[in-house]
Image (cartoon, rainbow, N blue to C red; front, side):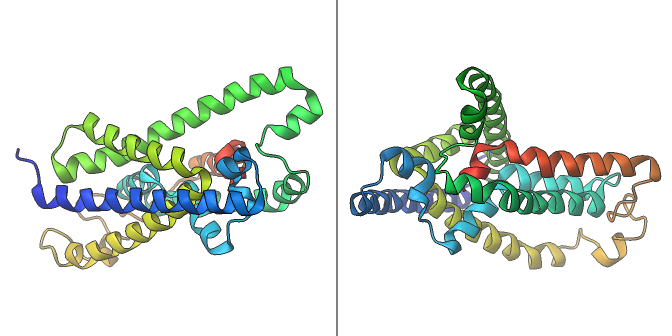
Length: 263
């Protein structure tokens, strides 16, 4: 199949916009660093703890809402054995994770000027144990980044008709460039841009999907058997405990992500 030229042009401008935002944020980061005499580490990892609340909300949301989240929740919604019920559970778990983190960890970690989530362990248990935990944290981040790039690369590959690996490499290179240039400032401001484009892009698709002759009335497919079982999902009693386990795993396990705490 031929490369989708309109899609390629749109994607080019999207990445150019994201990269431009990241570069602009890197200049803002350097200006802020000179004004406050903050260390390079504080600026790169924490944005000197001075990111405003609007950008903070966007970048905290983007902690979870990435390529893997969008694709994963869509597939979960479509899968009859999961459906809307499991999707709502996932969203509720991630939302609850912010409540737990905010009420339990945010204030003491900020008061003691910790830079990473491992600093409290270093203070309490020493460097040896913390080194082992650092390895576990590194593995978690590698797996998480991989899942995000796979989700994004898969979407690009379908839209552009380009090889899967090429799409992943393009996404990775753009993200690495703006992150190295501006640290958390670049990440936070590009999160604002990306979430805005995700919101606008998905809602732009809605009327076209609803008017497509191949689709059915979602109010009918929600509860009734059509092409497959209702997409509301109907977990039996034997799966309730699995759902509770997954909820707790996501809500409490999310506290182990460095990106979660630094935002």
